[in-house]
Amino acid sequence: MVTMNSLANATGAVAAFGGANFMLLPRWLFGAGDSGSASIIFVVAIPIAIALTLSLRFAAHALGPDDSKRAVRGSVIYAVITGWLRGVRTVLDRPTVAATLSGLATHRMVFGVNTLLVLVLVRHAGAVTVAGLGTAVLFLAATGAGSFLANALTPPAVRRWNRFIVANGALAAGAVIQIAGATLQLAIMVLCGFLLGVIGQVVKLCADTAMQIDVDDALRGHVFTVQDSLFWFSFIVAVTVAALVIPDDGRSPALVLAGSLLYLAGLGVHALVARRGLAVSSR
Image (tube, rainbow, N blue to C red; front, side, top):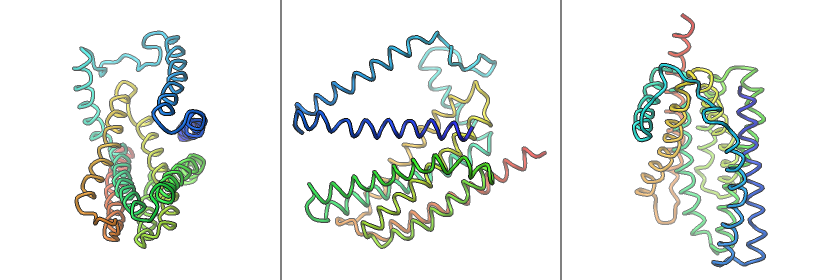
């Protein structure tokens, strides 16, 4: 299960990397203005149309979930609202899922803080159109490369230990790595971004696996919607709060250290809730 999750994430990462690089071709041919942007949007519509055509080959309900007494029925609006609430209840009833989602939310908060810090720092690093933009892109690329590497590292790590120990170790390592970024040196922060990319993807793969193993098929989709909501809500809240206190030049070691404390808090919640889930399952 972990291996297949890693393969799916790796495939998506390769596709995103290929698309980002392919985008440079129409940008070079048509320029960086409105015409270049319009050409890129037009080109992007082609693979989307192909994917839509292929998806129409699936019969209705061919991909599940299998019908059960716990499946949500009714109008689309009713299904969305009640399905999301049912997903929340399911998460709360599955300590193993709640534990890994708490760790994932913690990482997304730290990632939001770090992203804002890097963007503000490079804004005041000199020539924004060259050095600044290049550093910001490098930070995001390093984080993506770390996430890609985690797809290869997580399956053997989970087989060697288990997903709970691996997630605990990742969160603990994240707290230490985050402290190194308190120097606010951009080169070090890019390296930390790479390592934290590994950390975040490891935790996400553990969360995906928990939802696929510990949640009934009829409820799994609802739980994944909760994960997606938490994934972005945590990021947006962290960026918003950090924006209220960050100095104009972005030089705030306290914010970086706050990220380390967030990792430690996430580690504590994950370890406590996961232990409770393991105790229940062993009865």
